[in-house]
Amino acid sequence: MHKSAPPWQCHCTSAATTAADEKATQTRDAGSIKTNTVIRSAMYAASLSATPQAAVPSPASHNIQWLVLLVMLALHTPPASTTHISGEFHTADFFQFLIKFGFQKADLPTPRSRESYGYIFGNVTSPDTYSAPVTLVVLDKSMFVDFYSNRSFRNRESACSRMFARLQHVVYDPDCNPQGKRDFLRRVPCPHNQLCIDEDAPSNVISGHQFTYVIDLEAEPRFWYVALVACYRNRSTCEWHAHENFARLNNRSSSLLTTLQYDINLVNVHPNNSAAHPLTYQYPYDQQNLLEMYLIFMLVYIVLLPMQIYAVRRQKHPVTKLFTLSLVSEFVSLALITAHLIRYAANGVGEPNMQAAGDVLDILSRTTFMLILLLLAKGWAVTRQQISRTGWIILMSIWVPYCAFHVFLYIWDRTEVDIISDSDEYQSWPGWIVLILRTSFMMWFLYELRNTMKYEHSSKKLDFLLHLGASSLVWFIYLPIVAIVALQVSPMWRYKLLQGITNSADCMAYCVMTGLLWPNRAGQYLLLAGTKYAGMDELDEFNEAPHIVRERERRRNSPPDDISIGTSSAGGGSVGGGRGMVLSTSIPHSLNGDLLEGEDLNAELLTDLNKNSHIVA
Image (cartoon, rainbow, N blue to C red; front, side):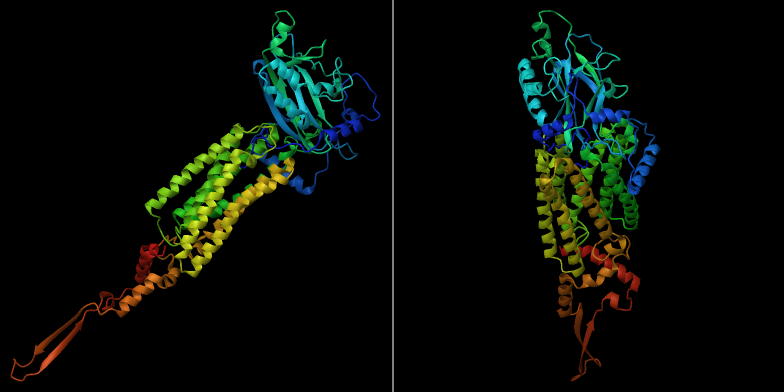
C-alpha cells in the first residue's frame, strides 16, 4: 500500500502488561508519604528544580540535525513546541477519541541528562456556563481497551457506568478514592486563566497551561490514548452519570455544557529540554528517526533523477519515458512526505494534505513501475517494437482499475480501520487485498515472461530477460514476505521496519532499472533505436534469427530470378545450318553495378530489423 501514515494514526499497541504497571507503581511509591493529593513522581518534582542539561549528541547525529535545521530555515518554518492537537468537542457526541501517542521508556535522570519522561499538557476551556463537567481521560492500552469497548451502549447512563467501572477503583479521587494510585482523569473544562480542578500540585503543571500528565511509569515503550467523554462523577454518591441526564437527576433546570475547545500537546521529553532532541521531541516513539531515513533517500533520488533525465534525452522511447514518469512521481512523493515530516518536527502538526498527496503519488509510482515490468515481460522493446491493440486493451483494462482500487484501499485504510487496533496497514482488509493483487500481478508477469522467452533465440536478450525476471520477482515478492515477518515484530518497531524495507526495495529497483535502460547498455538487448545508426550491434544477431536463416536457405535453393532460353539460326537459314542457344539471367539491381554504399546498407538492414522484429515474438 502507502509509504507514510499521519502521526495521529499509527497502528501499534503496547506490549507491557498490567502486572508490569503495578510493579512499577509499587517501586515508584516505595518510601513515599501517603497524602490526599495526586500521587506523582518524586523524580519529576526534583527535576523541575534542577538545571536543564542537554544530552550530548553523537557527531553523526549532530551533522544530520544541522542538515534538518538548514532545511527548516529554507522553508521558513515558524518555531513551535510540541505534537499539537486542537479542536472542539460537542457533548451531544458523547465520546470523542483525540489521539494515540507512543511514549518512550521512562529513564531516570542522570548526572549527564535529565529524565526522559513523557508529558501531556494543554488547555480545555468553554464559552458556555455549566453545572456539570465532562471528563478528559488519558489511559494506556491495558486500561483503554475495556473503556473504549463500553462506549457503544445505546443507554448512555449505562455506558458511563460500564466505562468507569474498572477505573474508579484505581484512579485517585480525593472524595471517592483517596487511596488511588493513578492519575488518569481530569474534570474539564477548566476555569478561565486557572488550573484544572484536579491539579492540586501547581508546581507540576507546565507553565502557561491548565493541566499536565507525567508519563513516568514506563518499563518499556508503549502507547497512550487520549479521549473526551460526556460523563461526570457524582461527588456525593461516587457514581458515574451521563452528562445529558444531569438536569433530570438533580431535579432542576440548569444550563448544560455543550461545546469545549481543547488544545493539547504531547512530547517525549520535558519541554525545557527540547533543544537537545530536535528530531525526536515531537514524534511518537514508533515514528522517531523517520525524518532522517527520508532525508537519506532524498539524497539518493537527487542523484538518480538527473541521471535518468539525461538518459531519456539520449534515447527517446516510450519505455524510458514511462520509467522517467514513474521515477519523477516517486521523487515528488518522497519530497512531499519529507516536507511534511520537517514541518511536523517544527510545529507538531505538519502538512497532512501534503502527506496524503505524497502517499497517492507513491501509489501511482509503484503501479506505473509495475506496468513497465509487465510491458518488458511481454517483449515490448526487447523482441518487438509494438504491442497489438488487443494486448493494450487487455493490459489497460486490468491496470487502470487496479490503480483506482489501490487508491480506494488507501482511503479506506485511513478512514475506516479502527485506530486503536493492534494491526498495521498490512493486517487489515485493505492491506490483505493489496498483497493479493500484487501477488496476482507477479504471476501474470511470470506468465508473460515465459511466453516471451519461449520464442527468443538471442543469447543477449535471453540473459537480459533472465536478469529482469529474477530482480523483478524479488521486488514483487518482498512485500508479502515482510508483511508476514512484521507480525512477529514489536508494534513500536513495526512501522519503521516496514517503511525502511519498502523504501529501500523501491530505491534499489529504480537504481537497477536506470542501469538496465542506460543508453550504452540498452542497445545490447533493447530495440530503443533513436537514430538510423542506433542498434547496429544487433545486426549480426538478427541475421542468425530462425526466420532469417530459413529465408536465406530458401533463396539459396530456389532458381534464379529470371531465366530465358531461346534459339537462333545463322546465315539466313541455309539447309543444314547450325543452331545456337542463348541463356540470359537477370541480376538484381543491387548487384548489377549499383551496389549500396556501406552507410545506406546499414540503415536499410536496420529498417528490415525493425519491420520484422515482431516475428520473433
